[in-house]
Image (cartoon, rainbow, N blue to C red; front, side):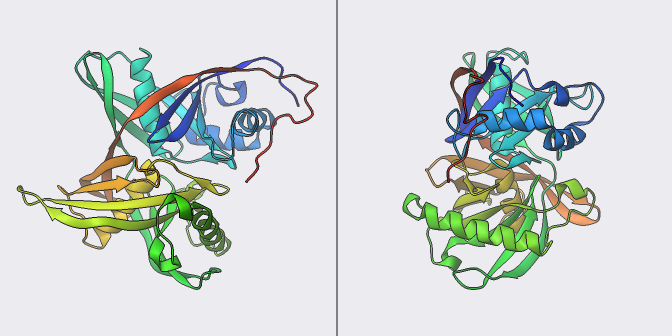
Length: 347
């Protein structure tokens, strides 16, 4: 199929990671009735929706690491909006950096009214559940956004995975999506730009091996099963004991997700999963702060807000604070004579 009408987007970035917002989304995912989780299933099966995703994500209009979302109706009146997150391989179940960008955009655009100085909760339905972007404004401008996620929990610890760099041991945790977590040093690498190509390769290996073994089956919703990304971590300094008795934990990570995409931000849903692992290991407690840095140096500040359980599994609710900035607006056109439609991905 070929669409010929122009497609308009509003582009933002969160910590360097792009988020391309499509307000006028394809009809197949905006019809009345389905939940956002159900709309994601529709999107994966719709030729039209997949074509638009490929057009906006792939070259020459995007690139292999482009990320975005289709705005859709929320599940009910309790949320301001719904969103389907997309990437180079399809549609994800969660996206923290996208939630932060959406909250900032909703307030900055006036879609959700806000005071010149204060805090505004933007409630968003995503495929993994209902999340909140608390937008802090000052002098009429967005200052930062705190993303409160669905509960995060550890799915498995100490799982052996064969790789081209030898056998490694990973933990699997859920933060809206399933992630494999391991130290970058265990594969002989650092979380730094010059190691990105090798980090990407081993991240893909680990994800594929775990999914082949069906190592990440969600206990409640099979649509949330499967390892979405691999988080490779390193510490950036010793934990600091603060005057109030809490600790500041400093770490850096790179998250490799989808078909070898690299998150330029510290990864919002991945940060939630990381906190679940640290909590389970006794390395992060309520009141402590995780200073989570990305491979490009951007930072999220994250914490545990409460303990809970998911289907009897101990879990934590996390809050992740970051900043998002507008990049521009785009009006993409389609020439039906173009032999490269809807686009391509070079990795």
